[in-house]
Image 1 (cartoon, rainbow, N blue to C red):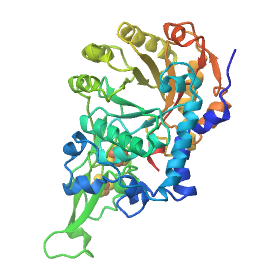
Image 2: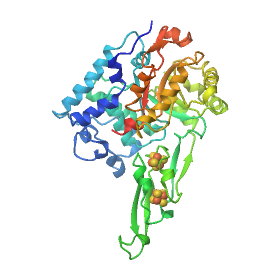
Image 3: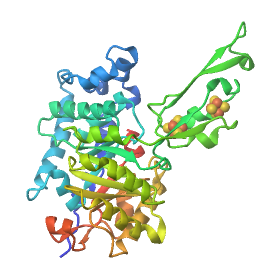
Image 4: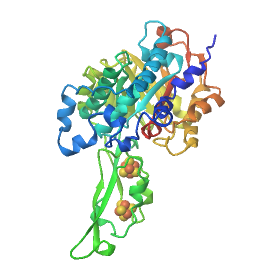
Length: 431
Ligand code: SF4
Ligand code: SF4
């Protein structure tokens, strides 16, 4: 028997639309870039970036402290509450069996993950995104493997729960890499003093994260109308840069470089022991299992603390399934919860245009065509946006399929959707 995912799954699969409705239809939320203004957004999100920047609340201090209670809700907040409560009720009504709601969503095929960004470390924005997408009903929030960022995610969830006590707490997932070749783990860098003072700053304009800020300052007695005697101050705001790379090719003077890094496994192990971290995602490039094996061995003691282990990787062609099975063989003796494969199509591109979603859907089609794929849930990422569900439908994958007989399928029954859900990154962060 195959189960067709209903139309209501489709709406649950796009919480961005729920949030957009709030912004566009009802005027409930202001654009986050106006978050320091006087609108509802600012009232819902009482700690804004200005608190951190001004030193009014030290970042670490704010994250470690018990979250501030939100301000009293205004009459207009009732609509926010009504919309979020409706999402809660819909989620609850669709639950069946004893699985955690997140697993039930994966089984139905309407799991949604918010990707804050493996390298995005702006605590104020991460908190606000976590708050609004918890209200919108996401199942998981994926963030940088950094204690302050994890604290910010949990604070956003706590504030959402104080607005809607019955809200489903999303799982909190930390993202790490096994080597420095994964594009999600890099930061742009340049020295603004090396920039020609008359540069039109295309880097600043192209950055989707507002992570480049440059100010012209005059040197000596000269004035603004004399740009050749000025210089730039500022540069990349490291905590906001998530490594998309769009600034690199637009610099006419080739001043920007990308600096890659690997998350420290010891720090990751400590994070996995926290009660407020539920899942881990390991990004691997598919270029060999050695680095994955090394990372896995260093996390082995703490991996049993999490409910879900995700592996994110690109489609590497004919060897993809063999590579995945080799990774599964490394993980299988130690996984005590669930495992998930993130099919990373075109990384960090969902906000560029509708067509960006094709690669992840093609990856899903590839996986659907092979029977010997490894056990676990499968989820799309990399280029996901408002077009993804339509693309899945066109590919005939927006419905359940028989799952190969595996340990996981024995645990959950013999039927499940092939594609358990969708993760949204840049597209979700645009709200
Ligand atoms: S890499 Fe992307 S996020 Fe980072 S500064 Fe460049 S454009 Fe902005
Ligand atoms: S585009 Fe290049 S040269 Fe121009 S301001 Fe940006 S980094 Fe500097």
